[in-house]
Length: 481
Image (tube, rainbow, N blue to C red; front, side, top):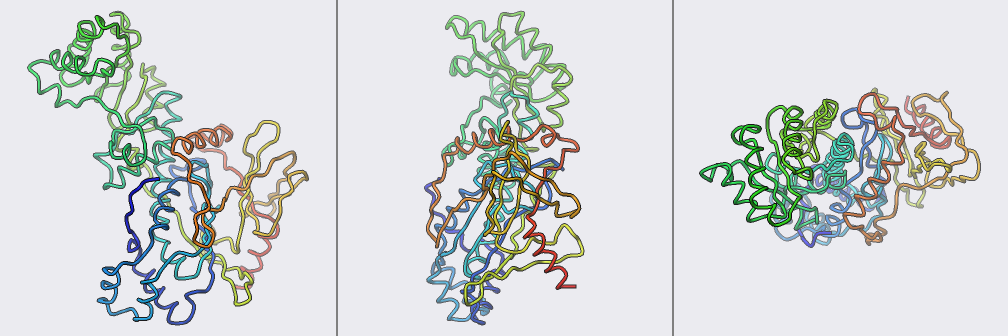
């Protein structure tokens, strides 16, 4: 977790403040509410997404407070009572939060986070919670797709200069690392979050010298154990690769160094890498790695490998860090229950003519069911918070979109997905190291069937409801007709 203590309390939609003032004015500010964070559609029409951004949400909540400057700004708007401003002056988050650990594969319409807190507190955190989870989950998901396309080859995140703002670059690189990238070109992501940073040279390095060979020779002399040379400044095959081989022979070989690399940033990557590989092997540099970059994504990487490109690693920039093909992760924050004066939980539902936007009411839990024999994920199960799943007995689950579709789960192991993060405003969750999150992601994705991981027309993973939750939803829909 970063040591930065930045107060982002005012990073909220203005209506969170106006609603808060209204709740306060009508004596509803301390009413306990329950909100679900979920999304409705996987990016790129994929089979799943990767949850990310929780650590930054934790940091934000721990630093929540309104300072004097904030209070004066709000007073100047002449919309807020002095009593409400005094409440904000002493504001502190005192609620409960449950969330899916970062790196976990997740699916549409299941809660990634549940917030239980007084109404004002729950509303005020909405914007930042969605901002962070939407952004990092989007980039982690895209990175995972790119890394799966690379089929075990190294993928590096190269997109800082084309990211959408500072946090787009810095936390974007963090999310890309969670999703499977091996490192980043962004040094600040390394200093702040521990994402391994690396890089070699730009075309300007080559242009600064009188000749391409002199540029390569100088770089090998300065970085003999990390010599990756950019070979496409002038002519990749006629000068770039031959000059790289010459520099390797004259500088690295006398030192006994056999590991080095070249990079292409333009041209026909399939053709160039095949030719370069043959040239390097013939010259006695079989351990020289070939890296390619230039507007890559999972589709182009897949196509390059199908064409027999000889590539050892990929630098993926703008199409990863901006998730260019599907740049919005549509996470939402919806009220699902409130408590009455006696502490009874009263479910709430949002109804829409668009069936996909009808919410699941009540305080809920989410389970993932794994096959006992092979450990593969079979289904996710959303139920009421007081329901107990006994995975020693068969369990019937039902499709929320088609009640007649039912599946009986047998010989399965149930695992709760949502874990406690805050209890009464106190952090009770030990934030894992970034490498642990990355390993979790790799392992959890490995438990998904290949059909779920297809890029095109993936199998729709089961996210089903309990009979109790389904009946409650039906009753509430009938009552609103």
